[in-house]
Length: 512
Ligand SMILES: [Zn+2]
Image (tube, rainbow, N blue to C red; front, top):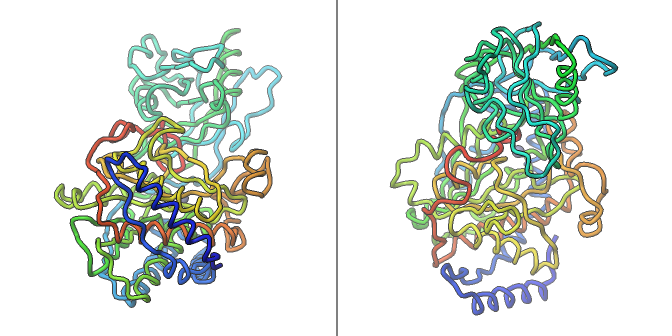
């Protein structure tokens, strides 16, 4: 959809006013007229790529997960299109350990009082990179903080080996979320001789629901499940009245050294020492075709790249379009890329723009909170500037937007860990739309932004054309603005995120 030209004029004036008013450590770049590229990047153009991703999934058991034929076909499709358009394209190979659930899990206790049997996927769920196996043994609580519910509750359950003094060998460790990573808790329990680990949510507001966590690779040696606060609290209550026997079953496997790729496509012009990286993950989960997550982001990035080439745009700064592999297993492709980048080349990256889910059917226009004003996690110096570029653009179109946290849920994390400024867009996943958001953005309050998130129904029908239209305009605008920028976006300073490994999430799963 084309924008009325009066609005574009107003938008440019607004950007100019901002440039004059800014106290400016990093002055906003001179406004670039992005209208030609935005007109060229159409909803139809983006949707053609999503149709192709759907067809690829249909031909490959309904998935485009890392290491699968559907992923490889997606990578070929993107690489071929970009090569034909004149980009310098390479596939970056890497290996990773892919976690898979083979059968259902069990969490049961006796005596169980009046409680219903615990339900897999509702009351508890296997943690990613859990061991596979079965344990029937007494449950032993580990340094729990109950009753819980206070906003400032901070459990350290299982974080110190001292928590396991006197732990009966062979028992099932009942632990509470808080302070350290689930990995550390599970490792400490295994070292103390536990036969299985149950980690339940911490209990305060926002930390009561099902804990869907990752232990991060490599696979731990004992079965580990995450549970709701209610389930953990109930088991702790039973333990207060006597011995409780637990039964934990996990049926999982880890495919080791699965080969996969990132696809990287560079413009052949532009300053290499000011490279703008524009990326999103190309893999889906095993459960579905991943058309919103993240066919939408990669489709919009691909179309932006193709139309830049079609219009003959020669960017002032090199642009590297990046399509990450194995994001759904814990941000592995982007982590590999940044981790193996020589330090000098790292310094050449001016900024990173991330687009992961930009077509959610019940969408909100979320912009990453670069300045930390909303969530207290500030990106590296320059990230605030990127946030402003997105919010100013939406403002110029008469569209509201809202901040979303840098909490480790997508591929920006590796970049901000090494001080590269980052930003991007997100239209929502499993979170529930509020009444206030429904008033501003339309859609339906009380249901998820994407009710098909990580499911088989994340198909071509699971995409809002309005979201794709608005987001792809913002992607084209911001990518071109930084591609043409003469002023710098300062990087190479640490973020408030605290550096490597500090994030609360590793992709879609909580890690602490
Ligand atoms: Zn995603």
